[in-house]
Image (cartoon, rainbow, N blue to C red; front, top):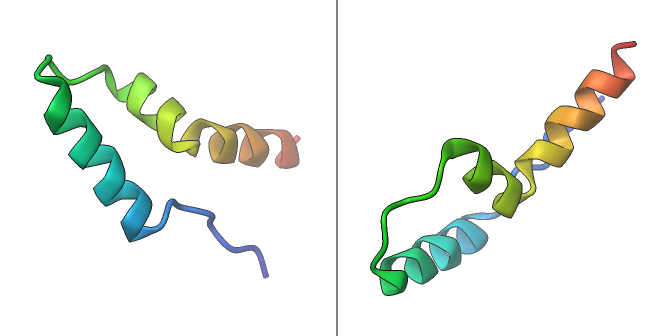
Length: 50
């Protein structure tokens, strides 16, 4: 059985804490996914479905 590898709650909290301290507009969705490593999961799924 394949498991999703989403970031832990702690990783998301740390990311959000870091973002709040920067005082700048939020990045694009693609950039957020890249920073959290979610794009790697999507790429892996695409490669497996071929």
